[in-house]
Image (cartoon, rainbow, N blue to C red):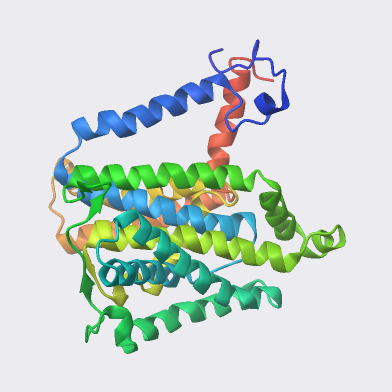
Length: 358
């Protein structure tokens, strides 16, 4: 009976249309933010920050951008790694070529570079869709690999395309420790998630969903397919570009074009599919599943093997991890093809009626 809406009356349109209309959800979100910003820094170790939390936050941000394009607008994209690379190298060029440029403006400018790149490779979406669009966006991945390896100016004349950054600062505060990097990634993620949530609830977001459901019917009722599709590519590419800048500047520190290979594009797409298409929460759940589960399995499997009395090699742990991980992905897709966000939504609906069965 603790998750009920009894007595929560809405007397204005603004109260009825807020992001979290149920009081319990607002309390839970406030507690989650307090836990993330204040409690986790007191409990987590340096290794936990660098190896688990920071990549999870950055991948959640990238999955958020992919979900806007794939989940809300229905445009299949396999070029997410290329958008991350453009955001990373764009931010790098602004950072090293403009003396004294702060980190946040550099990341924003890198995101704008990714926006222009995404719009360019989003133009085929005006004529093709489905598998053909996926192949067209895959061309962005190969083009970015060639561009950052062959055009030396983009990598500050580095022969191998490998670059590095140092002495990062935000508002005069150095970003050199694991805790400061964690707070920066978490702050950017919270701001971007809030903006994305409001955007998908606006008229632009409704246009995206209309194009996703049936683009011909959307055009008949006055929605401009060109504007809706290209705006989805622009917003998605900007968020992914900022995530690419964070991945390069904060997580890697030194990187090369291979750090943004096609593998990362597939990982982001899997995060969105497993987490839940067309759901802001789905990006977080998918990133947690893809990023954290393999780490957990690598720690749990040797312990379980020791309990039953036999040793397992490092290679055996790696193979078992891949098999279990793949099996869990298939199981989740069979049990709930709409993703983990749908399971969470069903659980919330049941809590509203608990303990009554109807």
